[in-house]
Picture 1 (cartoon, rainbow, N blue to C red):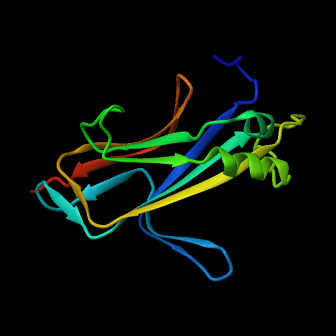
Picture 2 (cartoon, rainbow, N blue to C red):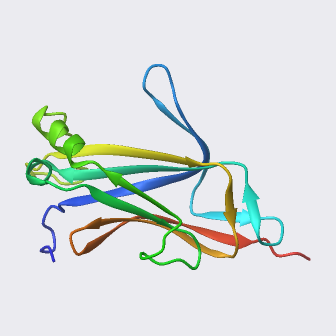
Length: 162
């Protein structure tokens, strides 16, 4: 467990959206992003033609240089657990190490006086189609040793019919 106020080794976030596009100039476009909840208009199960997970992982530079194994990412649909996720991917350690060695680091946000540098790595996943079977939450988690890193969640709720 890290000390309160200490710079985290790893953290991140996820953009949940209808589609992800990489532009010719390298910019990412997140189409139809969901701010916190998705409201479903019909009964479950619901099949979405496409659904995107724009995952950003920030790893402290000194940690990325020492890392020798990939970082597993798990995407859990409502009712699932880490042992049986619908989707899994790995952030390759070689990519982390290469970024750290090439000094493409960024300063962490809101850490005045902190000299820690972070490597930002993106993992975009577009699922086509995606079937949701119930209300609940979609969770995105990274596994870092024995630690579970929360990378975001999206609530799935059914609109109330009158």
